Image (cartoon, rainbow, N blue to C red; front, side, top):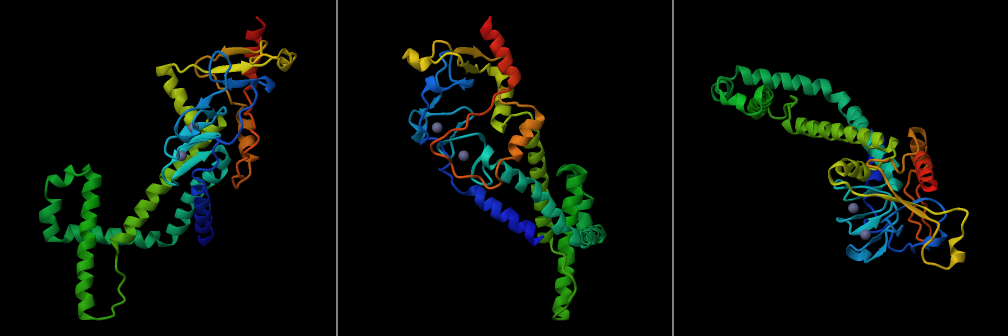
Length: 316
Ligand SMILES: [Zn+2]
Ligand SMILES: [Zn+2]
């Protein structure tokens, strides 16, 4: 239990750090003519994307990078901005982030297990006390409005809370009569803490599963959201295929004459390398997010089926 809590705390601390680092401002934009592999470009001319927001001020915005409006910087391999850690989650931090999400419900289960019987018996005691108490019967159980607050669930929830108050009141009386009583005090605060822990655990687990499934499809959270929005807004995406046989630098021009820019079909998976390879690319990342490499940029691999289709398109 202590080990899992220490693990979560350490990871949490690590994830919150570097709010303005890991940005891409200081990576020099590559010379387009030197790029020899297909890449996602900003427009029909094959231009590299730039970011004009905040301090980015027109700097290069590599493929899969996104400007986080909360952090005010562009992040490489952006997934989403997480309000809980007050920081962006990127693919570099994903392994640690997912670990925290998966370990949280485990820590909760381990922590609650020893006291679950005690808590349950206290709930039953409180409910019974509440039902037996004539006063509570009069102001709550016999009233129609007790159903209005969340239906049967709300009726029993609030009725039980009233029961806790009655039990607490009874114990205060006993305490006053026999000082130093060792009677176990049912504490509604402990129950509330467990409920909050339960909700957080469920939330963590759902988020972990959802994010993992998206990653297996080669999608970050942002890309998955964009995919949904695409149908409505039809955001155009382009891929540039430089010609490997041609050396455009020799031509001396600013654009490679042999490169072809092709618009993508709606929802075409650009970075999906297949479930197995998507999993392995995440698995092989280091657990502790590495320091940002300010000089080099690792171009994201592009779906081979897509490249095949685009080459076919290009050859026509
Ligand atoms: Zn930016
Ligand atoms: Zn952010």
